[in-house]
Image 1 (cartoon, helix red, strand yellow):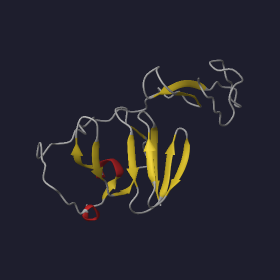
Image 2 (cartoon, one colour):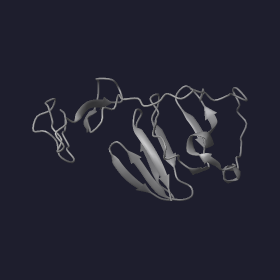
Image 3 (cartoon, rainbow, N blue to C red):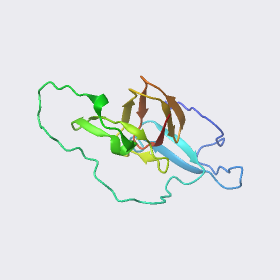
Image 4 (spheres, rainbow, N blue to C red):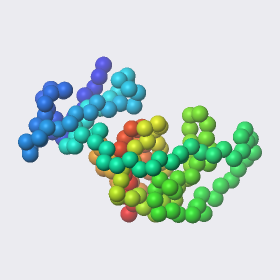
Length: 162
């Protein structure tokens, strides 16, 4: 049985024309992490979420496997990871299998010139140092040391570090 939760101003019925205060129409998006199966959210946007302003040169983010089938105990000094200016470039994958990538990141900032979307996988971030705000299409979440941030696949987000 579906449960409905609403936040903000929404039309009285779903999938109908919803005018915004400036005379335009809000753009509707049915968002789910498993296609049309499972839980979903009906989102309303000021601008269509399908509008692409720029496609930059793509680069592979596939991890490079250094040692396959490694069973040795390992110790990592994560706090000695060299900080990098951009959040996405600072991410380093340590362990990988078909279901999960585990890594570290030491970002100095998240560029405010773009938002990011991982369309392939959910993300879980643990904050070891610092604080900031996770900005998503669902709203903003403040975070601090010791917090876990769960970001469902397909969520458009940006991180502001304090």
